[in-house]
Structures are given as C-alpha cells and as structure tokens.
Length: 362
Image (cartoon, rainbow, N blue to C red; front, side, top):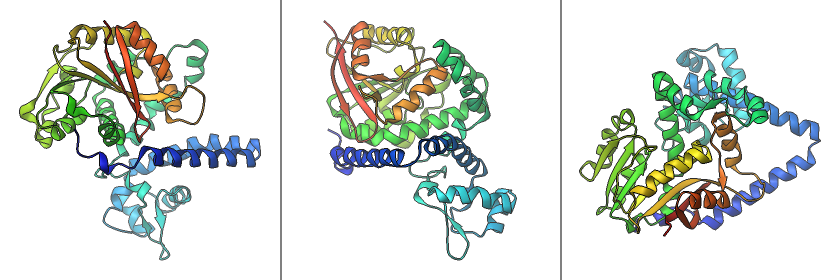
C-alpha cells in the first residue's frame, strides 16, 4: 500500500471546488452580453501567447531571487523596458506576476510555475504549446474538423519530434511537465502495492514508474519505450534510488512488449492514437499478459454529458496533432472489449486523471 494518500485532499472537496468554479464561470457567461463574452474567449489566445513570451524571456527565473524594478528586470531578460511593462501589465491583471507598491515586480504562485526549478514546473509545456510549429499545426483545425483527419498524423508527428531534436527535446520536457501535474493524485488513487512486477509501456524516461518503485520497495519494474527514449532514462531511476529494481527495454508497442508481469501501465498513450491503432497496441499487450495480470490505463476520461472539462481542450489537440482522441468511460469500455479486455473499474483522482483497471477477458 502506498503511504502518501493522506497527503492529498479529499476528492469530494476537490470536486466541490470545481463545481463552484464552473458555476461561477457559468454565471459570468450569462451576465456578460454574448458578444463581449465571445470576444473575451477569443482574446484568451493572446493571453496564452503573452504567457509564452514570459516563459521564453524567463521572467520568472529572473525574479527567483526576489523583486526587481522594471529597468533592472528588462536588462536581466534582454527586453525593452516599456514593452516588458506592457506585457507584465496584462499578466498581472490575470494573477501571473505582481507589482509591489514600490513599483518592483515579483512572483505570484501562478508565476512560480514558469520557473524550471519549480516543484511542479510548466515552463517547458508553455514553451512547447506556444512554439511556432505547434501554433502552425493549430491553424489547420478547420480542415481537421471538415475532414476528420489530423493536420499531422501520429506517425508523422512522432517522426517530426524524433528528427528535429531541438523540438523533440522540448516536447519531452513539456510532457514531463504535464505528467507531473497528476502524478501524486494517481499514486494516491490506486494501490500499486498489489503488484510485484510492473511494465510501464511508453513510459518515457520513467518518472512515474520510478516513483512507484520508490514507494513500493518489494516491487520490480520494466520501463518500455523506444530505444532512443529509454537511453536517457538511467538518471531518473538513479535519482529515485531504484536502479537495481528497474530495467529499461527498447522497442515498439505495436510489435511486442515484455511478457509475464503482474501489471501493465499505459499513461497518456491510448489518447494519442485512433481506435484502430489503439486497439493494435492493446492486443499486443494482451498477448503478453498472464491471465491474472492487470492493465492500468491512466487518461483524462471525458464526462458522458458535455460540461467544462480539461479533456475537451486536449481532445481537439489530439484531433489536430496525431489523430487520437479523448474518450468517455463507455468508449474506453468498448475499446478495451474489442481488444480482449474486461474493464473492472474507472477510478477518478483528485486531478482530471482517471485510473481504468482492466483484465484479460476469458
């Protein structure tokens, strides 16, 4: 049994706060004239680019040691003082950075996430989602909606980040940022102490698997990903102190995965792929699993009825890039059944993540 569950707030409290927030947002939409509300939503795109600019200039890093006046800060980040003031004026209005009474700029809790050394950093995620290549892909959303085909199919997208190493390294760091957001929530929601061996399929550099092994001392793990990805994994395992209990295996989950483990972990993998491709991945895993093993799928699970949910944004990201999709619980149940699995449970966490537990169907 993992020992850190008590450190997470009760899920009921988190969900209640979300309902209040969504309710207030709904009241705002109803009170503001429709055309103004729509313009606010359109302008949110400008705000995201302003946040990207702050990340690219590393303003948060420049303020890490304390408040600075505008001239000093502009010199530190290599910016025009007046233009920097105008950028920060917008960000401050949205709670990103603050200005003290003496005129010096300082960090807020939101701005701290733009520091690369933050406890839960998001700087690289902001840099990736705001970079020119990613923005260009999104200009093809209309075509994707008209045709149902992605602007960049999955194989092409992953080939792009493999060949353009600057982009690929940024993508890897961005995904590590995103993965860290819900990791503690996932670890608190599911008892990984039930397993003596775990294979993390498409586990990147192994941050999640290493943390599981750190918390479950009598468990061993196999990190499975592309050879060039797992080649960068030893440092993560060493930092967690699990090198002796975790091996790395390179390969393609469309062809084969390590056999004979108690649990197989898929975090943020199936949503990258179409039903056909996701089914192929699942069938490969099914062939490697003992009858009593468990498949653990960690994904954003969309609500059955339309309501505010972060998965709705990611679903369009998948439509534009890769051709994958976010799915509801019933859609995951059907996908798993078509691939030889029985869905046993879908456990929500205090984050938007869910843990779907399945077993090989008889």
